[in-house]
Structures are given as structure tokens and as C-alpha cells.
Image (cartoon, rainbow, N blue to C red; front, side, top):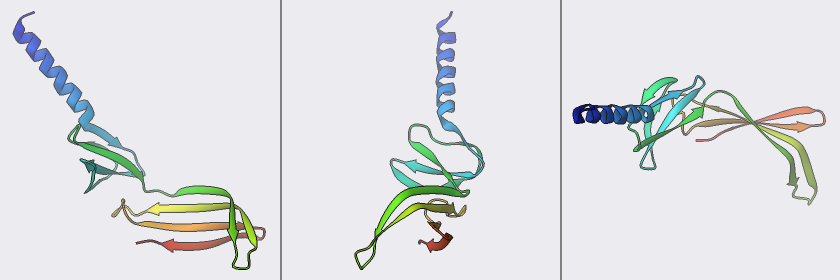
Length: 124
């Protein structure tokens, strides 16, 4: 092989490696948030294939569809000193697509013997 062909082969291999790290996919039901140098960028990407600057920019997919987290056996104390134990607490999160990185609407379901009670929290 001639030296020219080796140089072209190495360049093509480097381009393929960089392209592999630059291309990423955001799944349906998620948005992509980006970090550069550890700082969160304002850009939020929608589902699909996207490009980023490799090794400098990183991304994280954030689920924007309904998410349910569950905590079991939660002890709570009253002002009278009585301990109440909740069997299960479910936290339901839905993130807004437009501000997919900082606005959460949380609905908390507390299971009681008679059924479920619902509390809604909106955080800024």
C-alpha cells in the first residue's frame, strides 16, 4: 500500500469514530438535555437522531411521560407523638416538554385502609 492510501484510510477511520460519538438517538417519550463542561445548556432536543460535539458535549435523556415511583413502609410521627406507618406511597411525576429540565408536577397518592387519598404538589 502506498503512504497516501494509508493516510486516507486513517483519516476515514478517525472521521467514522468521531461521527459515531457525535450521533445519538432520543427515544419517544423522552427529551435530550445537554451538558458542556459540566454546565447544563438551554437546548432541549425532541425524539429522533441528533448530532453533538463529541467529547465536549454530553447528553442525558429525560423521560417526559408519566413516571411512578414507590416508597414502602414510611413512618410518620404526629405532634402528639403517635407513629403512623404508611404501607406504600406513590409519587407520580410528569415533566413538561417545554421546560423538560426544571418543572415538575408531582401527584402523591397515599394508600389508606379505605382507599387512596390524593395530594397534588406543584414545584417551581
